Image (tube, rainbow, N blue to C red):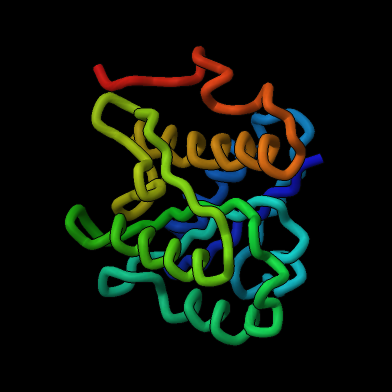
Length: 185
């Protein structure tokens, strides 16, 4: 059974709402156990437990929040090397368009890569103009249907990669399931 952790920090509740949608998407793949953890309750053991990790943070001046950075600097410090080769992705909410949410996702990915996570983006479209190339993003609460679909798509893709990479279940490879691929238009 693949193990997915959705780890998030949320100041206003918007990133928490995204995290629930990402977790819903992750649960769409059979034989996947999904845990949802707020940063304040999370431990290093939660991260070591999982095969795949989705990390969410509010956009803070264009990058990840200080609380999320502190978690990786302090809580995960002694787990260096214990998570190498696990699969990971990012998501972020911001106060408005142009607030830096995609850059915040990239800053999360840089932290994950430094711990050895295999990070990914999603080429599929969640809606006519909505992608997850760097992760799922939202402005404020994820109310729009396309944004909600992007969050679920990111979670589903994480579970697909966990099934392939951690469990060798090639039948779950995204390219093996053309009916799930979406193109713009």
